[in-house]
Length: 248
Ligand code: 13P
Image (cartoon, rainbow, N blue to C red; front, side, top):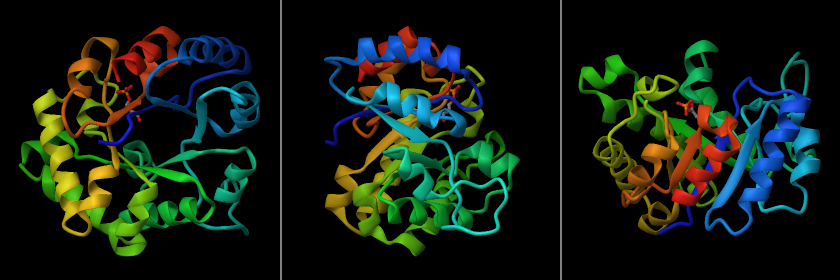
């Protein structure tokens, strides 16, 4: 079983002042917690957060990257730029990027490859909408999203990747997948990877994301195929984030 990873996705929240207070709380509580911990912060704060986290067990991540290495892509940020700030992780294919910014499966796959080429571990987000769940196509959607990356990156790439199952209907809504619902999809994802390589499938971290809170984290994290969490709202409150880390 892989070591659990709890990562905060701050989304578009924060300020220099707020970050300093939040990180002070997270860092002081992170000592001795028995899981890997990361925070994925907005680009302008990478430098600030890199400095605060230096010498602590908490790792730094970003929330997006360009699939391109360099060039005329105004407003974009490359993997090499993230590497300059010692990012260990980058989220790729978050559902908000897919739905609000029309990122395609192919683009997400290209971003996944770009991250790994720079030595950054991608956190690949997969998940179905409420309408897709209600139409019974959850597995088909997750398989399509996963297969698009497998086709480009290959199974070996998943030895150095994290997957986050985030049902879109559970993100920021207060609706959480039940532990059984989440476990079923996590097992499906692991099984699909195992068709290619069972050892890689057994070792890949599959996080759950979607209204994970101190009150529901322990039950979700006790499921056999749930190896951590990708935390939105609760990652903005140090005590809540740390409570989830301790549950892991
Ligand atoms: P919430 O925890 O706020 O539901 O957000 C989950 C998420 O999207 C993490 O990437």
